[in-house]
Length: 276
Image (cartoon, rainbow, N blue to C red; front, side, top):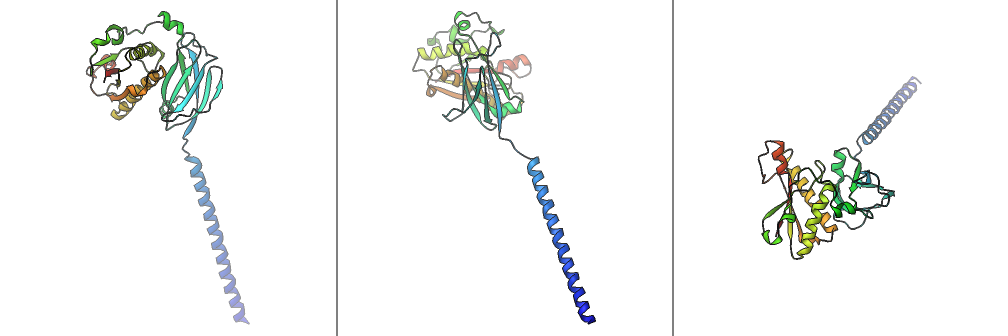
């Protein structure tokens, strides 16, 4: 009898240990799952964000209610769906992509440029203002001129005087700081370049972009290339065939002056074209 009692005690002891071990394993697994869930929630990587584009008059700074905007991913043909309102649009963009943006409105000059969604996020910008110039201001020349009043080659020299391989600086091309976004002050100069290309349909040119030496070399090369692409996007929007235009982002290469002062750095930040 005592032997039977002893065996029963041993059996229940082993059973109790097995149950306890099972409880510990279940608890450990639950804790592991909770930790994994916490880690997934703490480390999400958003690839897309909503961006707001506001189409404004450069003269009045007011929204242009009848403006239309189209956005297409670089290298694609299908336009992205937009949430549009009077003078504005909202669109969801991939932060790793570059887009071509086109804004038009009646009685205004068209605006076209490339938009790097990732760079805009790094700059803390999810709202972008697009300024359009009224046609009448361009036609009658009454728009205020930039303070740097250096005339560009296409308006002061005959085409016959520009030789193949000669770099011609476009002095009135302006971008937002550290951005490929063309400023409205650039449109008049680019319109003259488009007219020059239309007058000489056999002409092919290379657009060259340069920066100063501030910051990372590779980042400057990318910025200069993106700026050249913005210029080409504008020219193609004016009817110039893309096959006549070539891009060369030079970054800080070939400085015109030593990068030892802000004045000299301004000289090195430039856009040129070369007849091929």
